[in-house]
Length: 290
Length: 132
Image 1 (cartoon, each protein chain N blue to C red):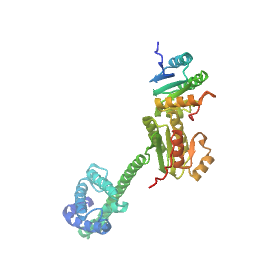
Image 2: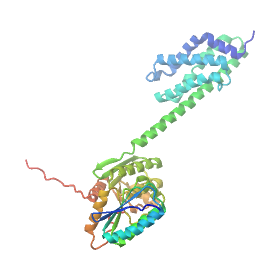
Image 3: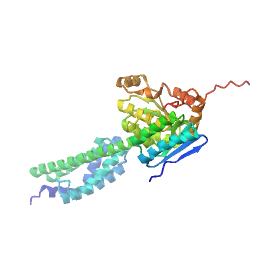
Image 4: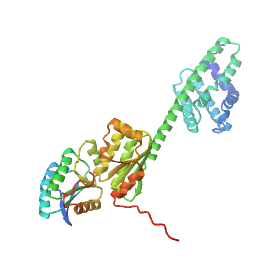
């Protein structure tokens, strides 16, 4: 009695699951020998076994063609978890996809063994299996990338928070040291933090130091001016320090009207200016006689 | 009938407190009353507490400039105290210019500024020293 491809495949999985698992494990361990640091063989075996069980069920109930149906949902969920887990652990994309693709070899070997005589069915089965595993592999990749994007987004948010501290440099003197690349959203955060601190502490002087900033564009310059103007309305004077020579040239070329803002070459100069403005003086002490 | 914005006199200064939403009529009344009070008390300084102000429009900012100018004409320096960050940003975003208006963060700073200006004055009306 001839069997349809689907029947034979799902029989092969049901009957030879342990053998396929062994073969698959060999393949995976060979491919992932370098990643023993990220995941132990035992954990990999547990994961593979769980996947194979779900996969066998899905093959039996859902067919090999359409993986969007309900029977395949548990398999896809499993792969989604696996992808995001591996993305966080630091697996590379190809290492992640290998999980699915390495299943081909043992499955194909088993199918050939079972259906070796019947060439027509063999080719059909192998093709169906190939397409199915490719689909699952691509799905894994897609989710891997998605979870990597999420990680990146989180890191961006963290950076945004980390990168904009408002320091109490001295009594009545606030300072914001800016480092790295300035963009609009970061400038917005800086502006809000600084104005909030001015309102809270009533500081008459705020120094914005941009020594560590590599480049400034028109938008960022406008934000700086806006911050200075708003601070002035709140009763605080803004001093911008650490404008590098290239940034100064860019500002002039862009025609940014920095004339209305106090600028100083270095943070030290800005602090000296702030001391003068708050009627403070730094005095060098005479060395004590022993 | 709306209530008028209170003006309190203390130690040769006038203290004006603006709270919450103010109508254009209230502001109009304030302009007239502040002139009168400056003349009567011979105050040299006006502290205008706007920390309770949550909204600012072009009329209000024009009024602030007008109050500053007319106070100066009468020999008093007007100082804005405690503008909120969001209000300050709105003013800047709207492109409103509060030219010649003195601003400080706290009442103490306002008093100190007025004291300094009074010491430095004599030859001049004593305005614009605070880099506004």
